[in-house]
Amino acid sequence: MNASRERHRTRSRHAQFFLRCCALALLATLFIIRIAAAQALSGDERTRLEARKDALFQQMLHNPANLDVTFAYADVSARLGDYEAAVSALDRMLLFNPSLPRVDLELGALYFRMGSYDLARDYFGRALAANPPTEVRARIDEYDPLAKTLPDGCLTNWLLSSTGPIGDRISGDPGATLASL
Image (cartoon, rainbow, N blue to C red; front, side, top):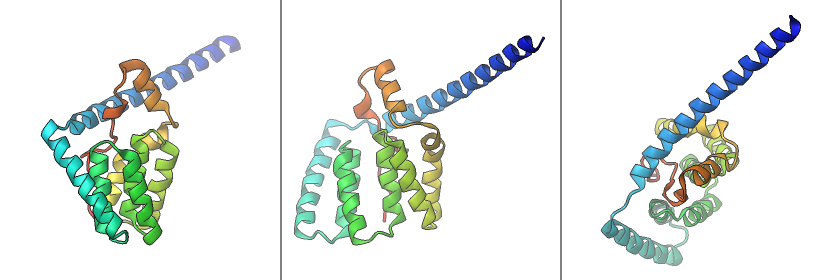
């Protein structure tokens, strides 16, 4: 009788785990579909953004302390899918002023897009610790359930193995642009 109960408990735990995994997979899939739809850029839009990115880069070279230009560069880079350039620009902003919760939010979002969920959680935590404005907190809340439950590489590996090479279209950002300063 005890063996039967133990098998029943084990099956019940496995069923609960399976249901949680299915719910998480569904949530992640819906999130990715929303993101992929937001990421589509027309050829003209991409060309316009590339030109804007180049102009902003030149402005950053001439005035590296201008955080508005740096943030605009990060925004355009992220919209183009150049997350590394966006991260680099935002990291530089924190060198000038380490107390920018919106920059921490955007770094968290970028690391989330790249599948580095541990780093994303760290930046979201830093942003929340700074008692950010309501709109920053709301954006963190959009990411937080997924960032807390996904291990690094989990979603990216699943997507690449099950749906083919769509990693370039994943932004992880509802709205696909950076918040304004």
